[in-house]
Length: 421
Image (cartoon, rainbow, N blue to C red):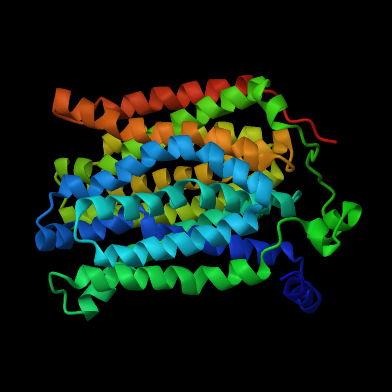
């Protein structure tokens, strides 16, 4: 397939790395076939048609989150050994297949196997593979390129639930119309992403003859150059930066999921209409896309460590601001601000890790930092739920999130500085 890539490279008037962004970004877009917001559309029709409890249906997502803690290191190893291209197009094939096969589910066990597999693909190989290949193609514009990945993920987060509902509406919204919807979502995954990944993805610029100074000059005319010296996975394990930033990942995604999964219920408790509460999630998704682009620009302009500090601070402050929600307008504003912080979480960690550890072994290194992210996601939602069950409200959750964000900021300060060449 290198011949197709070489032909495209000669035909386009811009750096081929942006084609890589399009291909890897397509996987970030379609991975939302297994997003929690997507399955939310199916909870009612599936429970009504199959007689399953809603807890049983959403439990498949929780199971996948736990399994991802153990599978992320394997994903990182496979990406390091075989390259992002093979892992990404294999992931797209499996994601599309498991998604459309859910349309044939008649037992909880079958559904759990299929959806949990797709959710693991969402959490590990696509998340790590897409950012890893972009990291290898970009140095000066690494932040912008990673920001576009975040934007495309945000678009998929907003559009896939819409696709699912539209297909069910076209089918007459019958009790079993959810089956046709799952079928077409799987086909959409293949149509959008597989051709781009299979025909245009190249793991490294050197495979197209782009090396050394030519690599940097084709990417950007700017004079700012990041540190591109790589260290091994073993050396990363021995570094203070690896462990501090892994803990920061746990803390920030603890906040991320703790707010996300309970946001709609909290807004309803505050007296807002359920439709308004649901629409606030859409506003949050818009904020995530905006935040991805802004953060991508910032990490190219300033130290990514500095951007991570302010991004974590923003995350904590915006979480606390939920305590002030008292109207539709304030709910939308706070949701958008929090969404911007979430957009930063999609961009800053992979950029900062590449800035510190280099790009050569970043896939394997990401494989061992992602379990901290998955752990934070798994525990954050449960912790906020326990606070509600014990106290009868979410009021104590948001100050907790603010404290955790402050701790994350302190850990970022004490992580080693990035040394430029």
